[in-house]
Image (cartoon, rainbow over all chains, first blue to last red; front, side, top):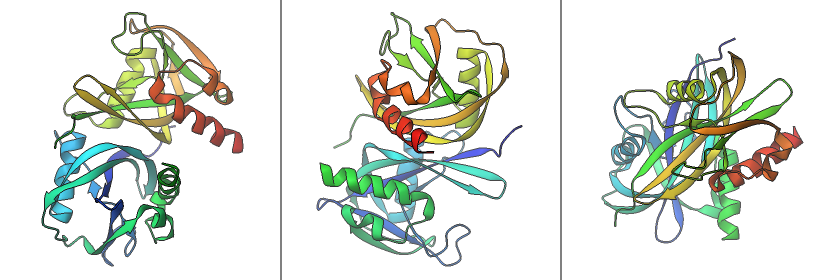
Length: 138
Length: 138
């Protein structure tokens, strides 16, 4: 038996100098998780490497340039006809002027310890809990 | 400041019907982690999707066909000039006749609860601990 095909999405926890991370609120007419808080990122275009894709998505969605610093974790979700595997990276802000794309309604810089209290897209809740706990132990 | 570039590697925890998972022992002349136990998988070729790449690598390294069932976690490592981000999937055995490639010396089917006691490549130890704990709770 063959399962539903998987696609890959790369997301990122972007940290500022105060250790807060960037969340974007999905617009009410989003196909998936309308109105939920999300991390920047998305899918690679054909022929694009995963890190190029992530840096492009971040710039499209936020106007910012970031520098990848590590791997934060993984997650998964299921939509009709397809499953999505998420690799979630960690990055720090480098440069740029913040601006939102039409995909999102607003943004917030959230202290990492408070991440689990935000109304995140459900596939990222376990990751957010684990990441906040790890951050508090450091 | 720009950090070392990241490349992406996709690995997989393959489970058999008894709930044991497949480990491969890296040959003594491997470039990275010689003699350590590893999961099957590797990097995507240009233009190849992450799941196609993983199924191809599994077939090259083990002769087996598998069906992806979920996302197991993420990990990272650092080598001179480059960092590697790992997405680790979960799969079940489908078909095929087991055979090793030259990359590996031997293989073992390991009860998931025993994973943390094996001499794994260091980047997978945290994942193995978490995966074994999660498996015992199910």
